[in-house]
Image (cartoon, rainbow, N blue to C red; front, side, top):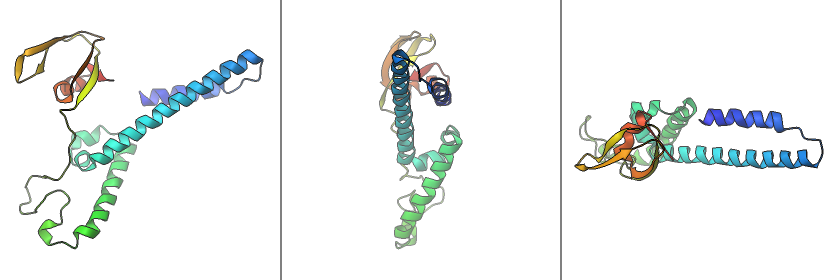
Length: 177
């Protein structure tokens, strides 16, 4: 989607870049320019938000191959470089501590296969807005409560916990809004 928006922005700049005609053309060129600035602002905000989320959960993103594969090549490079910088920064402080306390991933390094308990993970129980892209019929909102179902019809908008619609997102049956 972002790539398509960038292509449209470039086309608008090329096509609407002129405008040396009368007053009507100047007004239209000004409107195109304002809309173009709005779209650029939205793209920058989108990129800032993605980078912020990557930084917040960089260790989780890098250690989970499935999550890392969903990033663009530029985001993968950013996440890898950011992880290296954080490890280097904390390494200077953690290097002064006893050996078993020097990990950024575990509270105490006792076993190699111990749980990585200091890696922040995204909160899957946060509520998100989603739009249904295709009819799905009755859908179990909460697996723990089988009577809690909703009829998912195309175009409907719901506020639901991310955990419950994650599979639908991966199947491209819903989209986040």
